[in-house]
Length: 325
Image (tube, rainbow, N blue to C red; front, side):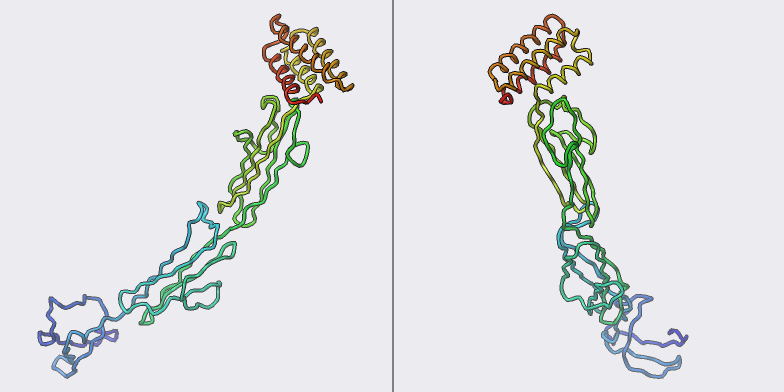
């Protein structure tokens, strides 16, 4: 029965080469039929003469799928150009063409080869297919995000715009500021001597120890592009610095009486006087005498083991690094 309510009878028998059990079409399928027409008592009659008089009507549009080259980051961003490949299937009349819309609101154009996207930022493509019966697939979209550029960043240190040496009686803070205008910043890390530190946090130099230290700054954007800077700085000492440390240790009650504090300061003043005169031999001699005073002070209980260790380490550093010249 058609949509107007009219019924057409179709005669199918063994002479057509078809039997009911071998009939390939199912109830509800639309087909076109050709054959020999005639009038019958029941109405109009169409007699099928061969199996190929039946042809299924294709009312289902094709299905299109896409593939992208490379792999995006966890945030969905690519770090390189992306090639888009479209494929379509239609199990009835077959695919006539694939169409793609490269500009939102623009016209659909025939897709003839994979498309390579090179522009940084977010690109949206629409695509669809048409089959040989003219069925048009509803358009679908692909959104591709590309960021090929590493972030920019600035590493600064307290007391100056760049990484620099400091004295062991001081403190330091590193500040890392990253910027990425395409995908955005995913992470920022500051690693001081293999230990992660917070940007802007103040750090006492004394526990770090004298000598060379490394600060690693790293900024990663959401596409996985990396900015990195690795710098070395020194924590150093001097005679005035050792005097400052002595005062700090006294405040912390690690120097037990004022007498030994006065002796340490007096010996340091003597060393500085010889250094001012350019006499490093006498300066060295008095520094070694100071170490004897420190070691004796531990034995007599006038200062703690830690106080002696801190001051001795500073004296050893001066002597072993030619800092008296």
